[in-house]
Image 1 (tube, rainbow over the protein chains, first blue to last red):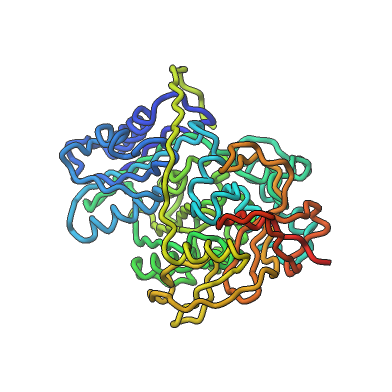
Image 2 (cartoon, rainbow over the protein chains, first blue to last red; image 1 turned 60 degrees about the horizontal axis):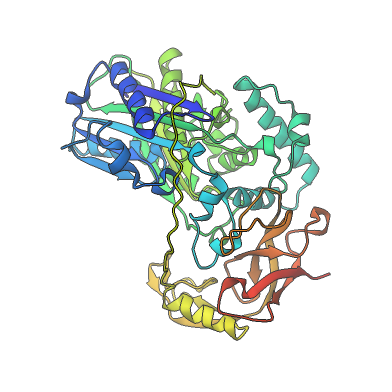
Length: 339
Length: 154
């Protein structure tokens, strides 16, 4: 991990997508003490639907320095883009790869945009957005248990995440906020945001950059009715794949975890899917509560993980990204401090 | 969140395009069945899973599916929510009255669930495992909303 760069997150970034992406890419290159000329290939993550245009090739190719270079475009979370870049390097195809992800939620009403992400025959006519999917999932996670106990637990978790990002919402504030999709309350959700993230991956030895040891990802069925909503089994599979690449045991503990959980019930899904994380604080930085940029947030988790590894004692860390309705897809990266 | 940069002009774009989605052979048969108030699922020869809504291919077994099986218009709630966020009806563009019930419903004879509306919006009256029955529109055209909603049976 040679360098990282961030632009945002902001509730509304009035800059264009190319400006946001360029700011993140330049910051990552500066952090890596390199420039566009030393980049062999680029992997970008974005989704046309969110951008309102054919995302990568119109808005991004030039500002990520990919003109007349190999650019791979990932229609998924930026952490999956980082996984592709790592595989390109491990395969020996390229030496240094720039990974960039962007999302600009303020451009359009997200619930309306997300309706278009569903099957056009069976679900779109019902007007379902991802918030509704999250409500269905929260209810499935709650199961037959005590609803008041679950709500209290989730309000406490959400409050802790808000506090970590400097927002003083108490558990009672969370519970008193309006119901969005029962049982979820408005303040249980991390806020949508505009952001771009960039990382420089290289096969060259780094003095201070953490080492990416393993990556894995997994896509489950799109329709929430085809999978067990009360489980993020796909995260478990992605994690197992990352461990195989890293050559590590799936039971080994992590010192730092940055999971992509937009709702508190998702933290319970993480703990159930990856028992090694059951006792971990999965979002010590506040995680997504600083702002969720669609399909970019997972790369933001990787950036936060790198920052934590650089600034702390030697450690082993995990970053997680997710995309699609109710956690359809998951990406995992396992990192260690620089030797 | 971080500091706001200097404001810029923004251009508002309204995209007004009609897409024509091919429904697949499987979905075409399914929708034709709805016109007769009949629901069918496709069963996978590999895993035996009965898919509803039907689709041509089992993603788990990587097998084409051909075997149609009948499904009842009654079933069980697998997950539910009561929605309070504004949602536009994708057919009319009009806001849907709030709140409304939404559920994943496993119809008798199927192994996957359908998204659909519920007639109940009181959380105290809803639970996983509750039995529901389809309420059909008087005029059916071969679309998912030929079923207006599901009523909760008590």
